[in-house]
Length: 262
Ligand SMILES: O=C(O)CCC(=O)C(=O)O
Image (cartoon, rainbow, N blue to C red; front, side, top):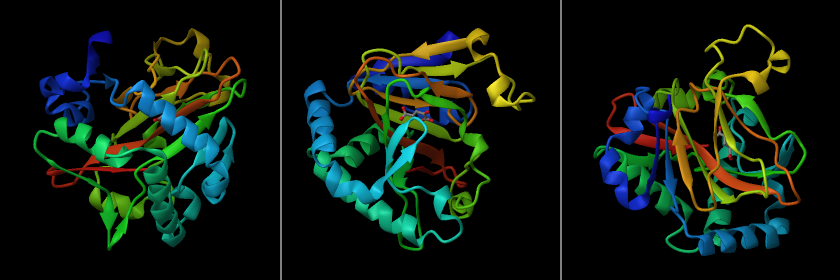
């Protein structure tokens, strides 16, 4: 299993020029790219996110693990107008908290290096552009982000439009750690679970389940087969909140475009 996980840096992405499709096909489980943003850049982003919270309060929601900043797709059901308005506002927030060239330009350039010359674009439809990401604040001692995989969500309300342009089943997840916690907050991939669970999640013995743990550092971007592989973020320990930002990546039905959204 381990050889299906790649750890690399931004200058070596040429070795994985079809990386996104390779993950989609199941040939690679994930690519961990070190220092896509520098530590200094991440400190500025964290500072801005902390200082400017009052100005983007309307995009913040409380979650079991902490707080979420961004437009939430399933919450808006079939009427996605509020989602698309919030996506515009979220892009504005990202422009304020990331210094140039900015968040979206940077992740787009990474996806392009892994695209095998496909176009790379935010998912868009009828003049509406999907949000590029969600920012997650995972608080200490709140259990982390519990077990999930992307394929669980794709049939929910709100995803109908995306289905028309992206192969949503088996799509990829990506996240950037802005500020890791003192301890915990690792990405755990559960290899020992069946694709379809027959036991309620609460009753699973996850501690004794075959698993892999990854500890991305500030500025590291992880792209992985999040729709297919059961995963979680382990409980954050210590005093610091874990800051991360991410979303989803997938191939168009025509296989000529890579779309990202959240
Ligand atoms: O670290 C994060 O922001 C969440 C990672 C995750 O669970 C996911 O991408 O599905």
